[in-house]
Length: 215
Image (cartoon, rainbow, N blue to C red):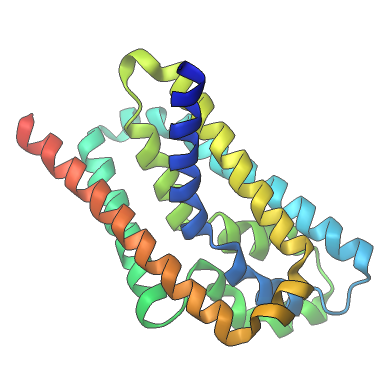
């Protein structure tokens, strides 16, 4: 039964993280940035980017309590603030079709001409682990019960690993996915992800407001 509960919460966190990371929206940027690279270097960049992104998210996960204690922020405040950040990002995705990955679009030509390592920036941050995904991680961490700290952090860590693994698979097959979906298909899926993220954001905000009211 405990394994089933853990799987349930792991799935919930994956479903919360995956829309905000939205690896499909990173595909056009990834292909543009790596267009001059051989296939083996392209896969190396994808692998390193996902490793960096996982490290960034996990660092914020395990540092969340220290950040909260340092600034004297309540857990309810974290949930409301995180929900508002995610809500703003969801509106961008819904009404403009843009998310964290779109921030690097203007710099594609400059980065490509420079022949630099793109795995940490702009791929890992902000394209994969941007403000939205960091806010989701911290918000989930704030909801871990005091008597389930170890299990809660393990669940979120596993869910983050699964989400980043899915992102790597998407980047690995980015050329095929881009040909199959096309620009309009990726744009449409980004809007669907935006709606799902808006629902998650409202849930975070509602739980934060409820805790404010009860305390």
